[in-house]
Length: 326
Image (cartoon, rainbow, N blue to C red; front, side, top):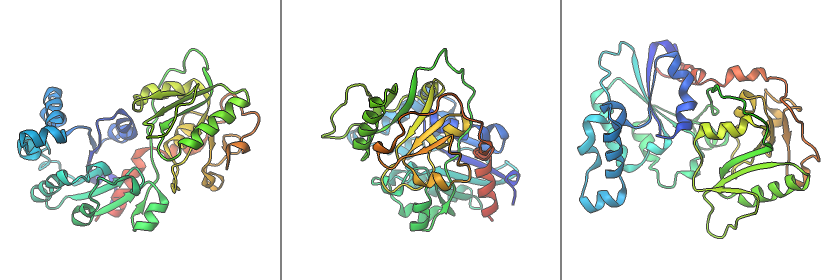
Protein backbone atom coordinates (compact mmCIF):
# COMPACT_ATOMS: atom_id res chain seq x y z
CA UNK A 1 0.00 0.00 0.00
CA UNK A 2 1.02 3.62 -0.49
CA UNK A 3 1.71 6.23 2.17
CA UNK A 4 -1.25 8.25 0.91
CA UNK A 5 -3.61 5.40 1.91
CA UNK A 6 -2.71 5.80 5.59
CA UNK A 7 -3.15 8.32 8.37
CA UNK A 8 -0.33 8.12 10.93
CA UNK A 9 -0.64 9.38 14.51
CA UNK A 10 2.80 9.73 16.08
CA UNK A 11 3.08 9.64 19.87
CA UNK A 12 6.36 11.45 20.42
CA UNK A 13 7.84 13.58 23.18
CA UNK A 14 7.51 17.16 24.32
CA UNK A 15 11.11 17.83 23.22
CA UNK A 16 11.60 20.15 20.27
CA UNK A 17 14.09 17.93 18.45
CA UNK A 18 11.47 15.24 17.87
CA UNK A 19 9.06 17.80 16.46
CA UNK A 20 11.80 18.83 14.00
CA UNK A 21 12.49 15.19 13.23
CA UNK A 22 8.95 14.62 11.90
CA UNK A 23 8.23 18.15 10.61
CA UNK A 24 8.48 17.49 6.84
CA UNK A 25 6.14 14.50 7.08
CA UNK A 26 3.58 16.54 9.01
CA UNK A 27 3.80 19.31 6.40
CA UNK A 28 3.35 16.76 3.60
CA UNK A 29 0.04 15.62 5.14
CA UNK A 30 -1.30 12.36 6.51
CA UNK A 31 0.88 12.52 9.64
CA UNK A 32 -0.13 14.00 12.99
CA UNK A 33 2.54 14.55 15.64
CA UNK A 34 1.40 14.33 19.27
CA UNK A 35 4.07 15.75 21.58
CA UNK A 36 1.84 15.66 24.66
CA UNK A 37 -1.59 14.00 24.33
CA UNK A 38 -3.42 16.04 26.97
CA UNK A 39 -2.24 19.40 25.57
CA UNK A 40 -2.80 18.18 22.00
CA UNK A 41 -6.31 16.78 22.34
CA UNK A 42 -7.67 19.19 24.95
CA UNK A 43 -6.20 22.24 23.24
CA UNK A 44 -4.95 23.50 26.61
CA UNK A 45 -1.29 23.74 27.54
CA UNK A 46 -2.38 24.43 31.11
CA UNK A 47 -4.11 21.05 31.33
CA UNK A 48 -1.01 19.48 29.80
CA UNK A 49 1.17 21.03 32.50
CA UNK A 50 -1.17 19.83 35.27
CA UNK A 51 -1.17 16.37 33.72
CA UNK A 52 2.62 16.19 33.73
CA UNK A 53 2.70 17.28 37.39
CA UNK A 54 0.15 14.64 38.33
CA UNK A 55 2.17 12.03 36.41
CA UNK A 56 5.26 12.55 38.55
CA UNK A 57 5.83 9.16 40.26
CA UNK A 58 6.13 10.58 43.78
CA UNK A 59 3.07 12.80 43.51
CA UNK A 60 1.00 10.03 41.95
CA UNK A 61 1.96 7.68 44.76
CA UNK A 62 1.30 10.24 47.50
CA UNK A 63 -2.13 11.22 46.17
CA UNK A 64 -3.05 7.76 44.86
CA UNK A 65 -3.62 9.18 41.39
CA UNK A 66 -4.45 6.85 38.51
CA UNK A 67 -2.95 8.80 35.64
CA UNK A 68 -4.99 7.18 32.87
CA UNK A 69 -8.43 7.20 34.48
CA UNK A 70 -8.11 10.88 35.35
CA UNK A 71 -6.99 11.94 31.89
CA UNK A 72 -8.50 9.23 29.69
CA UNK A 73 -10.64 11.58 27.61
CA UNK A 74 -7.58 13.47 26.35
CA UNK A 75 -5.17 10.62 25.74
CA UNK A 76 -6.48 9.75 22.28
CA UNK A 77 -8.28 11.57 19.49
CA UNK A 78 -11.35 10.75 17.42
CA UNK A 79 -10.29 9.25 14.09
CA UNK A 80 -13.48 7.36 13.24
CA UNK A 81 -14.13 9.46 10.11
CA UNK A 82 -10.56 9.86 8.94
CA UNK A 83 -11.29 8.10 5.64
CA UNK A 84 -7.97 6.26 5.57
CA UNK A 85 -6.34 3.29 7.19
CA UNK A 86 -5.11 4.25 10.64
CA UNK A 87 -1.70 3.64 12.22
CA UNK A 88 -0.44 4.71 15.64
CA UNK A 89 3.34 5.09 15.87
CA UNK A 90 4.94 5.14 19.32
CA UNK A 91 8.49 6.19 20.08
CA UNK A 92 10.19 3.82 22.50
CA UNK A 93 9.79 5.75 25.79
CA UNK A 94 6.06 5.12 25.61
CA UNK A 95 6.81 1.48 26.48
CA UNK A 96 6.52 2.19 30.19
CA UNK A 97 4.21 -0.11 32.15
CA UNK A 98 1.91 2.75 33.17
CA UNK A 99 1.15 3.45 29.48
CA UNK A 100 -0.09 -0.03 28.59
CA UNK A 101 -3.71 0.97 29.12
CA UNK A 102 -3.34 3.46 26.26
CA UNK A 103 -2.38 0.66 23.88
CA UNK A 104 -5.42 -1.31 25.08
CA UNK A 105 -7.65 1.72 24.57
CA UNK A 106 -6.47 2.00 20.97
CA UNK A 107 -7.14 -1.66 20.32
CA UNK A 108 -10.66 -1.40 21.78
CA UNK A 109 -11.65 1.78 19.94
CA UNK A 110 -9.83 1.14 16.65
CA UNK A 111 -9.57 -2.65 16.27
CA UNK A 112 -8.52 -2.36 12.60
CA UNK A 113 -5.73 0.14 13.30
CA UNK A 114 -2.07 -0.82 13.25
CA UNK A 115 0.44 -0.07 16.00
CA UNK A 116 4.13 0.50 15.26
CA UNK A 117 6.98 1.07 17.73
CA UNK A 118 10.07 2.94 16.57
CA UNK A 119 13.19 2.55 18.72
CA UNK A 120 15.02 5.83 18.22
CA UNK A 121 17.74 4.83 20.70
CA UNK A 122 19.65 1.67 21.53
CA UNK A 123 17.66 -1.23 22.96
CA UNK A 124 19.96 -1.42 25.98
CA UNK A 125 19.09 2.15 27.01
CA UNK A 126 15.54 1.10 27.88
CA UNK A 127 16.14 -0.33 31.35
CA UNK A 128 12.88 1.19 32.65
CA UNK A 129 10.83 0.06 29.65
CA UNK A 130 8.62 -3.00 29.29
CA UNK A 131 9.63 -4.40 25.93
CA UNK A 132 7.12 -7.23 26.31
CA UNK A 133 4.49 -4.61 25.44
CA UNK A 134 5.78 -4.77 21.87
CA UNK A 135 4.95 -8.47 21.73
CA UNK A 136 1.45 -7.85 23.06
CA UNK A 137 0.50 -4.79 21.05
CA UNK A 138 2.83 -3.89 18.14
CA UNK A 139 2.26 -4.99 14.56
CA UNK A 140 5.73 -3.74 13.57
CA UNK A 141 8.85 -2.85 15.53
CA UNK A 142 11.50 -0.74 13.79
CA UNK A 143 14.94 0.21 15.10
CA UNK A 144 17.24 3.02 13.98
CA UNK A 145 20.25 0.78 14.71
CA UNK A 146 21.10 -2.02 12.30
CA UNK A 147 22.84 -4.07 15.00
CA UNK A 148 19.82 -3.94 17.30
CA UNK A 149 17.53 -4.78 14.39
CA UNK A 150 19.55 -7.89 13.57
CA UNK A 151 19.99 -8.98 17.19
CA UNK A 152 16.32 -8.65 18.15
CA UNK A 153 14.53 -9.37 14.88
CA UNK A 154 13.28 -5.83 14.28
CA UNK A 155 12.95 -4.00 11.01
CA UNK A 156 15.69 -1.47 10.34
CA UNK A 157 15.25 2.13 9.25
CA UNK A 158 17.96 4.69 9.97
CA UNK A 159 17.34 7.95 11.79
CA UNK A 160 15.65 10.56 9.61
CA UNK A 161 15.54 14.32 9.96
CA UNK A 162 13.74 17.34 8.55
CA UNK A 163 15.77 20.31 7.38
CA UNK A 164 15.19 23.56 9.27
CA UNK A 165 15.72 27.03 7.84
CA UNK A 166 18.03 28.93 10.16
CA UNK A 167 20.14 32.07 9.86
CA UNK A 168 23.79 31.26 9.19
CA UNK A 169 24.94 33.39 12.11
CA UNK A 170 27.03 36.53 12.11
CA UNK A 171 30.34 34.71 12.08
CA UNK A 172 31.96 31.36 12.70
CA UNK A 173 32.55 30.77 16.38
CA UNK A 174 34.19 27.33 16.35
CA UNK A 175 36.17 24.90 14.25
CA UNK A 176 34.50 21.87 15.87
CA UNK A 177 31.14 21.57 17.66
CA UNK A 178 30.05 18.73 19.91
CA UNK A 179 26.86 18.41 21.94
CA UNK A 180 25.75 15.29 23.79
CA UNK A 181 25.29 13.39 27.00
CA UNK A 182 28.36 11.92 28.68
CA UNK A 183 26.99 8.35 28.89
CA UNK A 184 29.75 5.71 28.85
CA UNK A 185 31.83 7.64 26.31
CA UNK A 186 32.88 10.58 28.47
CA UNK A 187 36.56 9.59 28.63
CA UNK A 188 36.69 9.52 24.84
CA UNK A 189 34.89 12.88 24.63
CA UNK A 190 37.52 14.46 26.88
CA UNK A 191 40.46 12.86 25.09
CA UNK A 192 39.09 13.98 21.73
CA UNK A 193 38.58 17.53 23.03
CA UNK A 194 42.15 17.64 24.31
CA UNK A 195 43.49 16.31 21.00
CA UNK A 196 41.62 18.95 19.03
CA UNK A 197 42.71 21.79 21.31
CA UNK A 198 46.32 20.63 21.10
CA UNK A 199 46.07 21.05 17.32
CA UNK A 200 45.08 24.69 17.78
CA UNK A 201 41.43 24.17 16.92
CA UNK A 202 38.67 26.21 18.53
CA UNK A 203 36.17 23.85 20.13
CA UNK A 204 32.56 24.38 21.12
CA UNK A 205 31.81 21.39 23.38
CA UNK A 206 28.57 21.02 25.36
CA UNK A 207 28.25 17.95 27.58
CA UNK A 208 25.26 17.00 29.72
CA UNK A 209 24.47 14.47 32.45
CA UNK A 210 27.83 13.76 34.00
CA UNK A 211 27.82 10.48 35.88
CA UNK A 212 29.30 9.87 39.35
CA UNK A 213 33.09 9.98 39.21
CA UNK A 214 33.27 11.90 35.94
CA UNK A 215 35.25 15.10 36.43
CA UNK A 216 34.84 18.34 34.55
CA UNK A 217 37.49 19.51 32.07
CA UNK A 218 38.31 23.17 31.64
CA UNK A 219 37.08 24.54 28.34
CA UNK A 220 34.09 22.21 28.04
CA UNK A 221 30.69 23.73 28.73
CA UNK A 222 28.62 21.53 31.03
CA UNK A 223 24.86 21.76 30.74
CA UNK A 224 22.21 20.26 32.96
CA UNK A 225 20.35 18.76 30.05
CA UNK A 226 20.54 19.08 26.30
CA UNK A 227 19.78 22.58 25.05
CA UNK A 228 16.75 23.24 22.80
CA UNK A 229 17.39 21.71 19.42
CA UNK A 230 17.04 24.91 17.42
CA UNK A 231 19.49 26.58 19.79
CA UNK A 232 21.91 23.72 19.17
CA UNK A 233 21.46 24.13 15.41
CA UNK A 234 22.57 27.75 15.76
CA UNK A 235 25.90 26.37 17.05
CA UNK A 236 26.00 23.97 14.09
CA UNK A 237 25.49 26.77 11.59
CA UNK A 238 28.39 28.74 13.06
CA UNK A 239 30.86 25.85 12.98
CA UNK A 240 32.91 24.21 10.23
CA UNK A 241 32.92 20.69 11.63
CA UNK A 242 30.69 18.48 13.77
CA UNK A 243 32.06 15.80 16.07
CA UNK A 244 30.31 12.46 16.39
CA UNK A 245 31.31 10.00 19.13
CA UNK A 246 29.33 6.79 19.02
CA UNK A 247 27.76 5.03 21.97
CA UNK A 248 29.25 1.65 22.81
CA UNK A 249 27.84 -1.06 20.50
CA UNK A 250 25.97 1.41 18.28
CA UNK A 251 26.20 0.60 14.57
CA UNK A 252 23.74 2.93 12.84
CA UNK A 253 24.12 6.41 11.44
CA UNK A 254 23.28 9.10 13.95
CA UNK A 255 21.73 12.52 13.98
CA UNK A 256 25.16 14.13 13.68
CA UNK A 257 25.67 12.39 10.33
CA UNK A 258 22.42 13.71 8.94
CA UNK A 259 23.10 17.22 10.26
CA UNK A 260 26.42 17.25 8.43
CA UNK A 261 24.66 16.28 5.21
CA UNK A 262 21.69 18.63 5.58
CA UNK A 263 23.71 21.67 6.63
CA UNK A 264 26.87 21.13 4.54
CA UNK A 265 29.27 20.50 7.43
CA UNK A 266 32.36 18.31 7.79
CA UNK A 267 31.84 15.37 10.14
CA UNK A 268 34.63 14.03 12.34
CA UNK A 269 33.45 10.59 13.47
CA UNK A 270 34.62 7.35 15.06
CA UNK A 271 31.89 5.41 13.25
CA UNK A 272 33.85 3.13 10.91
CA UNK A 273 30.68 2.27 9.01
CA UNK A 274 30.83 5.75 7.49
CA UNK A 275 33.62 4.54 5.19
CA UNK A 276 31.20 2.16 3.46
CA UNK A 277 28.18 4.49 3.51
CA UNK A 278 26.46 5.26 0.18
CA UNK A 279 26.86 8.97 0.91
CA UNK A 280 30.55 8.80 1.90
CA UNK A 281 32.74 11.62 0.64
CA UNK A 282 36.30 11.81 2.05
CA UNK A 283 36.17 15.60 1.86
CA UNK A 284 33.14 15.68 4.16
CA UNK A 285 33.60 12.65 6.44
CA UNK A 286 36.77 12.13 8.46
CA UNK A 287 37.05 8.84 10.32
CA UNK A 288 39.24 8.37 13.40
CA UNK A 289 39.73 5.27 15.53
CA UNK A 290 41.47 7.06 18.39
CA UNK A 291 41.95 10.79 19.07
CA UNK A 292 45.60 10.42 18.03
CA UNK A 293 44.39 9.61 14.49
CA UNK A 294 42.75 13.01 14.02
CA UNK A 295 44.55 15.02 11.30
CA UNK A 296 46.62 18.02 12.27
CA UNK A 297 44.26 20.27 10.32
CA UNK A 298 40.61 19.96 9.34
CA UNK A 299 38.89 21.28 6.22
CA UNK A 300 37.39 24.74 6.61
CA UNK A 301 34.39 26.14 4.81
CA UNK A 302 31.41 24.19 3.49
CA UNK A 303 31.99 20.95 1.55
CA UNK A 304 30.17 20.32 -1.72
CA UNK A 305 26.49 19.73 -0.98
CA UNK A 306 25.80 16.02 -0.49
CA UNK A 307 22.96 14.85 -2.77
CA UNK A 308 22.03 12.16 -0.23
CA UNK A 309 20.15 14.88 1.69
CA UNK A 310 17.03 14.10 -0.33
CA UNK A 311 16.92 10.63 1.27
CA UNK A 312 16.76 11.93 4.84
CA UNK A 313 13.19 13.20 4.88
CA UNK A 314 10.76 11.49 7.29
CA UNK A 315 8.31 11.25 4.37
CA UNK A 316 10.32 8.27 3.16
CA UNK A 317 10.01 6.59 6.56
CA UNK A 318 6.21 6.61 6.36
CA UNK A 319 6.39 5.24 2.84
CA UNK A 320 8.55 2.44 4.27
CA UNK A 321 5.93 1.70 6.94
CA UNK A 322 3.05 1.79 4.47
CA UNK A 323 4.77 -0.78 2.26
CA UNK A 324 5.02 -3.20 5.20
CA UNK A 325 1.61 -2.71 6.77
CA UNK A 326 -1.24 -4.80 5.44
